Length: 121
Image (cartoon, rainbow, N blue to C red; front, top):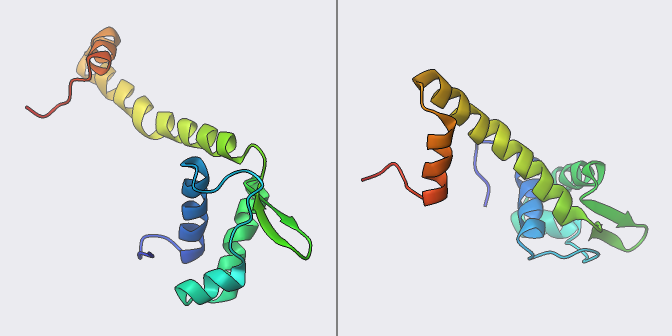
């Protein structure tokens, strides 16, 4: 499950975000505890706890004292909004800048996107 590209706690948090976004975890659904994550993936419980702290701070999960962690209401929309912003910042904005630098009219770029034409032929 884990790779060397980012810290394990971030990978855990990202997996939970993906599960919420894709519907594998629903609002108010309980998620595994830090102990369960630690045992399942053979990691330090503090590592899993750090992932949950990040998700709580973002408003993706919340804690019910003595019960556990749960997916927050509105978490899917929150994650989708964050990913949309990242998509535009990381993919669309640089594409627009490159198109302008190459002298490609934006209406031509939009037409290509609308037609679903890929670059491979």
